[in-house]
Image (cartoon, rainbow, N blue to C red; front, side):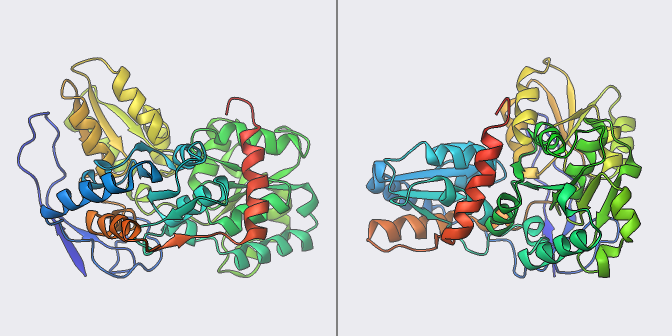
Length: 405
């Protein structure tokens, strides 16, 4: 199935929407020029009925301080309008933990984010995900059974004892728990360098022979190791869980320093080096800024690389009149463009790519969740298994103990 994304009318801020183009939903059709995730059937939610805005306001007012609404940067505007706090996944989980008086945490994001909020909040708080179909293709690329089998491969190769697992925040609670059980840590796109340096220090340092198993986004791991830690691309191998032995020989595993899981973000994986070349030709002097989940050749071709929070702050500090091309999810790019009408903001890709799973959290689902709570009915509660929650908390606490966090 194809979904046509229409071009909006010219925006007075100067932001140019990507041209009308077909958007392939995950698992529906193929786009050989980009990376794609796992199956995610169904269309993007339809536009909300305007009457829902009033219902949302009424439900939010009725809940009052009993509820705390979190909105990820990639959410659509109609949802962000009702968020008490906006931010990236880890910031939002920490914000939830800092509101012990809130009985209900409504997490407008995706499943792994709500899991992290459940882990970090008290037993008296209840975390709600308005649509349980809001998953994450990247997180789904590392199933706990696959990761445990991969660890057995490392044991058979004789390198498990000199390997520290580091998992990206964009992973399931089970994967975070696996990391905690094996003395590893969690990282975000903002602190990946610090987390990797800590991990290598546990096994002899960056200049030693120890290894890191990095889950589940190969691009963030590779970009951080090469661009921040000074390693080479030859130090990195990709472990494919769908192939025997990960598609690697024992010697390749022993020679590697970074064992990267074969996972990626289906939005950031779309951007190409050609996108960068084309925008530079079209807009001389433009600043290209991308997320570190983009492929290595895209990151090395860009001028600035950083997390969603980094992108927002860079635009805030940019000179009036400057031009920017941003490679991240379109909802965020639209929002920063509107916030900075004195700057020219372009979307890096020529075709539209929303995060289709993030966009499953729409106003109808949020209204339904809030009205249900007003009526005394708990819906879509996210509860992490107690043992997984314990070990995932160990890994998260290790991250919180890292310098500069």
